[in-house]
Length: 73
Image (tube, rainbow, N blue to C red):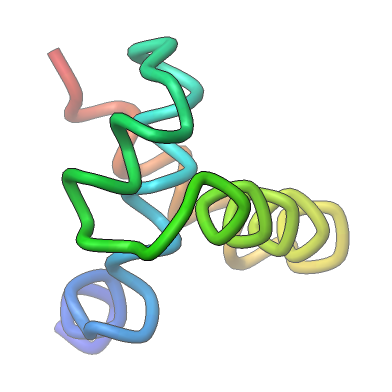
């Protein structure tokens, strides 16, 4: 149950979905920013870069991302 709460906590949700939206939809940084009410495309880029860095360093995060990707259509 804790994993589910971690996946939906606001601190993880926006970076997670920002990263996945870019990876799986090819949406522009501006489009993603508009969707998540971020000020600029550079903010979106920063979020994605931080997620990519975290994924390189955190095996647990990679597993959680894989779990989410497994349920995506």
